[in-house]
Length: 79
Image 1: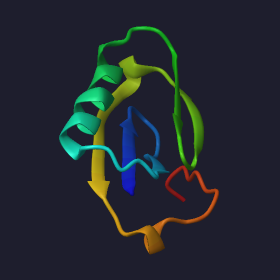
Image 2 (image 1 turned 90 degrees about the vertical axis):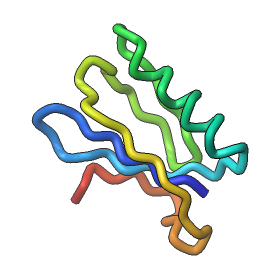
Image 3 (image 1 turned 60 degrees about the vertical axis):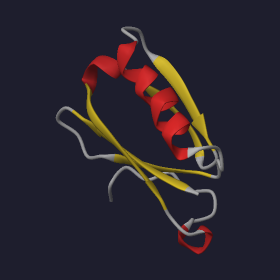
């Protein structure tokens, strides 16, 4: 289980969860590709889909969490 926190300019972080069990290093490398895009993108993970503008993202934090920490069907905006 992965916890993804996306920090953007002038807004609260977006917190997502992904039930992806692939290699953590490869997962991070794939995620870092987001930062290369200049156009708006759609990001789909287990907890939902968000539309992002990569030029407004300042950083992304990815960590592994236990399954029981995964809130069912939730996308939060930092509240």
